[in-house]
Length: 368
Image (cartoon, rainbow, N blue to C red; front, side):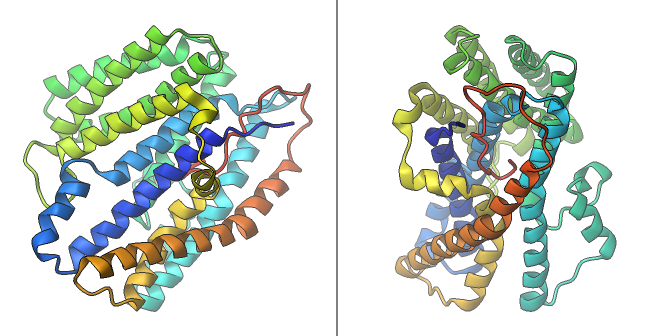
């Protein structure tokens, strides 16, 4: 019997709600008069912490906790892992593309070129320098890199060695921290940001190997977490600067998002199922759909709802977005994600022997 960890789904729920909150509040600040509340909004979601980045990084930690342990004990583990990932990711992703294209055309009359659409269908658009149809897709490229990296490490027998992830976190953190300080190059800093996201994922594996696998000690976690935090703070300062602008991206807000996500994940992993929250765990189960569908729900709600210019209207606006996003995402999860995942199981080879803990912890996250 497969065991699903409720605290992991709770983390997914927290992560996607943070992303949803960020996007909804940004719409209010950018499109409606907020008067005396203007800088209060900006401080909350742009100066102190960017909740969108916090949520995304929390998802990255969950991926690191789950994905390296998702290679089944079967005759063809790499093939089965690939099939599993394909049917978990692509059907819901393609659904979001269709919904997004219809939404943009019906509400704004906006169309996209056929080459851009077809390239986005592959999910590899970032790797061939084709723009994402929508900005939320940037996280999927990071996830794909991690999947490919884990597959390579698994194939050469390094993924399950207990110190592999530690070495990766330490090496990436040291090299990139020193590089960010020594080299003034924005393109290089952007690449280091990719490395930072991957470091968060491998740190998730370090934590898993400590709290569940028992392969590592807490000093490994402490050392890796410290280096990761230094890396995140240093790169955030270099990448986003020390002057606050009205774009919600600021060195402090991004740095605090990375650090807070890491510490919160560590807290949950340490106490395990005692941190589970049933209602939030439900949101976590459908979180991949929430991540993909909520941007278009926001567009529809904003188009059809007069939210006024006061706190009551803004609160109602956010509440309607949350409710509508959860409803729409439950529908896509029930009728797209779940059936496709079950269908994909038909193509997997038989397991060699029963597993005590199958990291099916892999309920859908933004890119799981």
